[in-house]
Amino acid sequence: MTSVLFDVTGPKARARHRIYTVLGTLVVVGILAFFVYRLAASDQFEYRKWEPFVSPVYLEALFVDGLLETLKMAFSAIVAAVVFGALFGIGKLSDHAWVRWPCWLVVEFWRAVPVLLVMILVFFAWGIDRGESGAYWSVVVALTVYNGAVLAEVFRAGVLAVPSGQAEAAYALGMRKTQVMMSIQLPQGVKIMLPAIISQCVVALKDTSLGYAVAAPGLTIVGRQIYTDPDFGGNQVPTVIVLAAIYIVVNLLLTALATWIQKRFVGEKRIEVTAVGTTTPVL
Amino acid sequence: MEVVWDNRAEVAQAFGYTIALFVVAGVLSLLLGTLLAAFRVGPVGVLAKATAVWVTMVRNTPLLIMLIFFRIAGPKVGIQFNWIDLTVGDFRINNIFAACAAGLTVYTSAFVCEAIRAGINAVPVGQAEAARAIGLPFSGVMRQVVLPQAVRASLPPLASVQIALLKNTTVAGALGVFEAFARMSDLTNDHAPDRVAIFVSFALIFVVLVSVVSFATHRLERSWKVAR
Image (cartoon, rainbow over all chains, first blue to last red; front, side, top):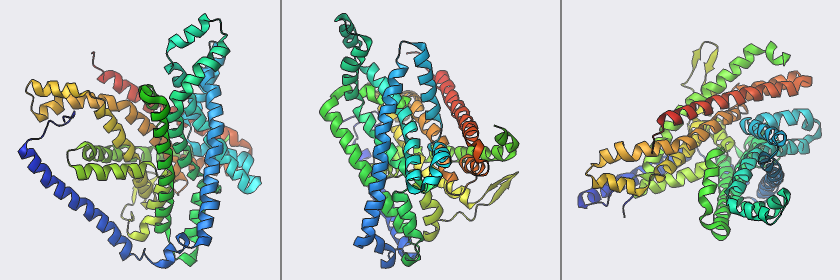
């Protein structure tokens, strides 16, 4: 099999690659061994430091106060962001300039502003006297406007990716503009957008961790409570490893769902969706 | 707006830190990301698989966790930046700055790797086959046919990765670097009635910075464009 980068290998190249493979394996194993050695040398494998991640009481705190809150926050934000994105994305496609331009301005502004700035504004202006739920909704609002602005682009591109003959046929049947959008373009567009919307869920889920800045409930705050607790002997390293592992597993499940939906409902339409990816921020 | 204007020296310094983080992490992440991409698409199976696992892990970890690792957990296992202590004018580049820059670099390099890989995958196989068929050696195939196309194709995704990095520098503000986000949070705390004006000013400066980066990459894209 040829690839863009390499021709089919001959005997010399194969011998060379065998040497590289051995060297590469040694390097990878060496890095892993060094990491484990560093952890062991600084007593990171002490039972005390891992206790919160094996005893049921703390695990409950980690999953109920941590993961569940994080998932709730991400879910609220993504639902609101889809509504926001649909409104402004379709607004950007409007035939009326007075609708199109404000929508364009709103989308471009919220896409360029860092999530944390929005979060701290909402928190100080509204959430600060409302304790934990104030912090919770500050995160949700900030994630909504940012992800909503990104999703607006996804919606616009998704609707545009529907072959134009569909809308023309609908107009020829005598449908109104709203009817064409709601019953012809959107249903087909949503199918194309689904994978992009789910990858945006991964972004939203990762960004819920920023709730740390306003002490919103969620995994990062539970993590901070664990590693500042002197009973566990300053277990920052185990905590970070466990938190990262939880996020990675949940995100990989979401990605697997996106791939499955892609295969099941969308098929070869992928080209348009990646084109969306390049015009919208990836992170 | 007056509050921001009255504190313009502090605000300017804060954005100085933001830009410093962006430039340091941007350059380093491009270097590290290119290296990762070289392993990722290279012929050595072990390295390609190990890099793929690494990139998947980093991409799915929140940036905040990555920064907490370098800032708070790292010193426990001997990852320290105490040897960095530079003072350039009013800017102090200390271990906190270095730890946050390192976290941003590691995080962003995973996305840089994916952007470059996407660029290489965008080159049709026929291009390389044709180049080999006219007798170009490996270096010629790479230098004259594959890489010029791959670099152009990976420019737009690289630009969005770097723009995301610019916005992500604010996360360092939550962990002790006195950049734009930390300064805004401070000003908002001291001048509560002006908070919307403060937010709008900081947000608009970010809009300008993002526009500058995006304009620069558009210019680059245009000047590299080849008629086909």
